[in-house]
Image (cartoon, rainbow, N blue to C red; front, side, top):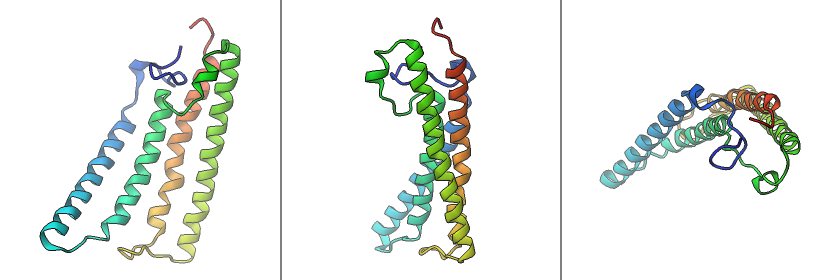
Length: 168
């Protein structure tokens, strides 16, 4: 009934797992490692820091966080108060899981809303990034966009828990 890690049930059966989160997470991690390695090697051999790579690294870490959150909700590995929920009967477990998923969706929606406002402000005020001098909205636009797959995975989890019966 619950995932092997002890959290709420996964949103999809094991055979139907999508691999998009794994692919994008691995790509972001590989790019992050390559950028950091290039910065370390350049600093070691030339005593020159590639400081501009820091803003790309920060963007990749934010990207990786949202991709990881979507994957966690897909697999049922999000943060949960399993100690209390495991001691309840299925009707109460179901209620608390649905409430937790709804509150998670609300929180991510708020992050998306305020991220949209922040990106719009960056665009309107023509804010530039400190390292590369690029428009800041290039980085901040991704936050509300990355909220969408997280909300989609939460919605899948909500539908899965809503349809699940105690006997399963």
